[in-house]
Amino acid sequence: MEVAVIIPALNEEQAIGQVLAEIPRDVVSDTVVVDNGSTDGTAAVAAAAGARVISEPRRGYGSACLAGMAELSRPDVLVFLDGDHSDCPEELVSLVEPIAEDRADMVIGSRTLGRRESGSLTPQQVFGNRLACLLFRLIYRHRFTDLGPFRAIRYSSLLALGMRDRDYGWTIEMQIKAVKRGLRVLEVPVSYRARIGRSKISGTLRGTLLAGYKIISTILRYAWR
Image (cartoon, rainbow, N blue to C red; front, side, top):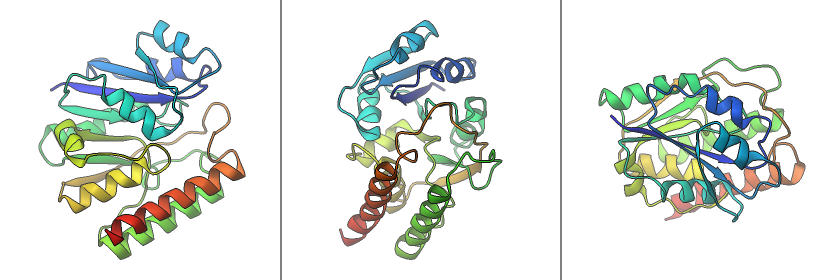
């Protein structure tokens, strides 16, 4: 089974090398780092560490993910993880395994169910995550514990979802569409660490508010549709 990894990265020069070093090479056949407009040496460090690096100057998490997908040659499973070393790449196997065993089409790494380092999630992140999961359960009748970015999905299933969001709504759009299309979705516990460097979203009030607004509005918009 061919497994590919996409890592959106924006100014992660300090972290990206460690992230790439921890990816299990016996499981992953292709690793794509999408440089989302970095002004530091992220791209050079990633390339030196053996990743395939592409540039997506249009800012946005979803933009980076879509650009990475366009570079792939139809793997069986695609894994998304962050480039700030908060996710634990060595736990990737636990996300891929249920798909390989045909028990799931998508697997989300739940930081809520797993072990979290102190301070790895800000209070506003914890509150926003709980609120979004509650709304999701009330509207879509499906229980999630997290909207975490560390996830694996069958590539054919992902293409069928027709992903569109180009920024903060990417993860919740994927979960909404997966549930509405009847995909088999599982959550597995994952560890979560304090990121290296400052978060571009939760590290600022503006980023936190914009992300929260986009997530909630996406949940409501797809419910209306």
